[in-house]
Image 1 (cartoon, helix red, strand yellow):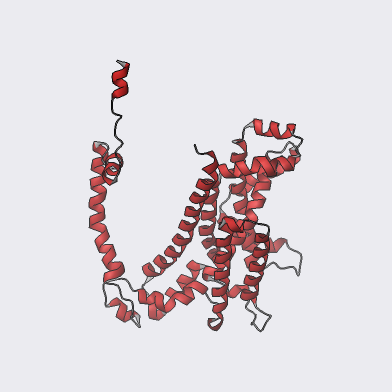
Image 2 (cartoon, rainbow, N blue to C red):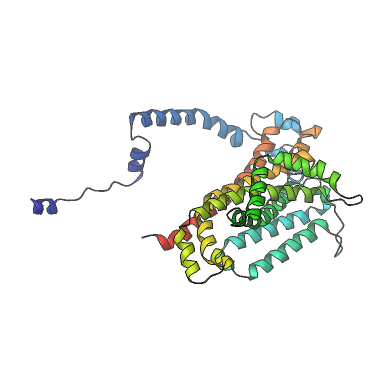
Length: 362
């Protein structure tokens, strides 16, 4: 009987598009009903949206009246106002400077994502890049006119707030996570108080406090720039959430890792730097990326304290009497910008997870 079983042909594994649809879309009567319902809704909804977005859209109108005569989207509005949306109230003739600063920032971020650049020289690249960005945005040297940061806006400002926010919040969050797990009661209590206090209030309240209340506590004659105050509030807010995420990763590391490192005579910081933190950070890559994406989107909240971000720039473009009534097009445009950056961050995190897990796959 055993020989008969040994001679049987094993079941064939079904692959391909039909097998995928059968297992994921039509695996049960309920799934069949839901699939048909969703397909019907898409067929009813998508053709009209596609026609409004592209087929009936107006791309070349010179005024709002021409655009309103068509039944589709008015992308001519974006063509006419894209510089205001992207660069805010930065002087029109000098907008090549924020454009170049944006390209430098994006190029530096891309280099940081490539493994061939993971060397000590990357720190020098960041210093040079940030110095170039500051030089281009502020000016005052090399024949560049001075542009105060209250004239900054749009995409460059959003990238600056999010880049500096992530760069400074991440190490601060790691230190807070280590402090919360510290054996020193005073350090642990301070870290717990900070994390719970910051996580217990919304980012809007921190921005209001940094903009309105902080100047009241400063000595007379001392003034901190509004943009810098907003940047500090964003860093402090993100650091608290990163700390809790990293603490979860630290708790996932088996105690044997700590005991083995101590048996080798490693100090606390050697243990954390060489053994524990690399494993803990790898575990928490998905939630960390979610925090980074949320931070990038939450920079739009600075509009409430009068900083000219992408959303405020779009509102300024819509306030032009010659181009009123195209709110959908304006917000679709900035939504596309946010989507491109957030989707890129998400895809990179997935590739990073696969790369780090390669050594553990069988």
